[in-house]
Image (cartoon, rainbow, N blue to C red):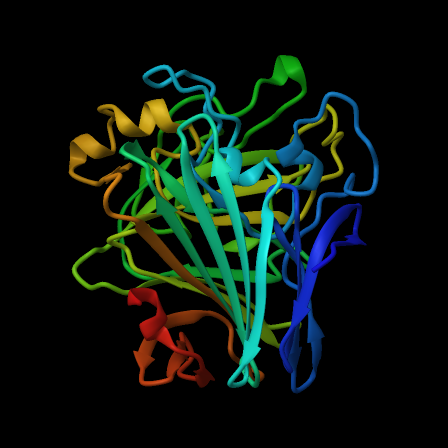
Length: 376
């Protein structure tokens, strides 16, 4: 299967009856994705505004920056870990993937890509599945031949409507929440943050700011001119967790489903024009990364694998891989139409061949998809 140019990057394009998707050869980044809902087509994922430029001195991961991509190891990876120097978000986010197959049959299509990593030799296989009649994307990454500690994650980035507060964010039960405890941006270099460094919180609508005020992170866009990062740890008493962004003005909700035993936390990267250095140049706005991970914030492998304040609280920030046992990371992203008055997802209830979204106002939306995929 040949690649075709798609928003500045050679990409593989594939589709079901209800979803059209493209994934870049460079970094395996998934976007644009068009979901066909009863009231029209929606495209929730962001694509960097420089995607069709050729910015100088920009690493491959940022050249392609868009949508969702798999990170192993997740984060900046500025520090060496046991002789390993990984690029930002790992080779999985910045190296060229190899096409293996595109399979069609039984009402579904599955794209299979692979990547042989060099920094820590091993094989990563990517399977992206679409099913006719469903507005869901099933992602599976299989890591084979790796041994030792690894932090992993999905890096979904959404483009929000420009109207302040147009998106309503919610998650499954939060066990622990904290703003990044180190500086995220440096004003001397043209980067600015608004949240209180290291602040601990239990609710997204009550997060401390650096100026002493409290802000509602669950409503976005907000805080134009700032770049912030925070993380929550999901309750792990069950094997099902979720994140969601509802857009009442657009009539749809985006949501992601995961097994918190594999992806324990969610990093929120709030990017609203707070970076004034290239290639950002103050133009990356109204974007939020809702990044389901097992990691220590965005810091990288060294910080996630070693003792840190989060894993000392008993919350894992890395996984232990075995060369003889592949790791499977299964993840579902989906969208659904919502009725008038549906403001925010309160809970997601899995069922056989479906999930049901319940809103804070009592509305109920049933979405056909297979939650059992998370455990396959």
